[in-house]
Amino acid sequence: MPSIKKILCAVDLSDHSKSVAEYAQVLAKSMDAEITVLYAAPSLSQYVGFHVPPSSIENFVGEIVSGAEKSMEAFVAENFSGVKVEGKIISGYAAQEILNYATNNEIDLIIMGTHGRTGIDRMLFGSVAEKVVKAATMPVMTIRPNY
Image (cartoon, rainbow, N blue to C red; front, side, top):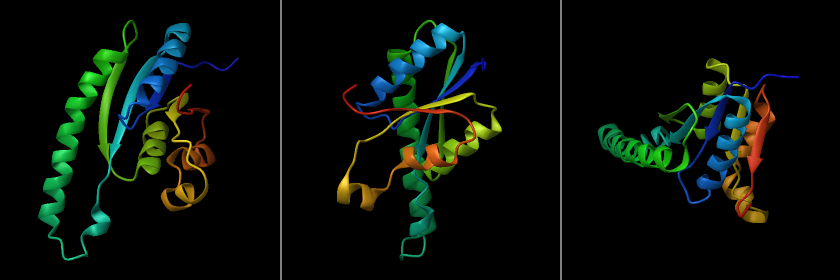
């Protein structure tokens, strides 16, 4: 049977992230695994060419990351107890950053939420979870909203 010792809990720090955290904590406790809670802040580098100075974008992303760090501390404290857990904030395209982190840190299982989008919303916004599921080399557990 495969051993699960390192779990990556990818969150967007929305209300639904609490459900994702619950599953990560239950699995970590039952398998004596450690959890890394990961939030990927958008880099916004694709907007540099739109007459927006790079320094303005960097300052804005810095504020997003700073706010996310505070939110992550509170989220980890509120949702994880009795397990080894670490919160991390990275910047970039969420799906790619999740996959890179998981690969570079020998993660055994990724747990993440879905937004449950369908139809035109899904076509317009895409799905980070779908991209991770399709490209990951390790198992991915997805949690739909309201479960």
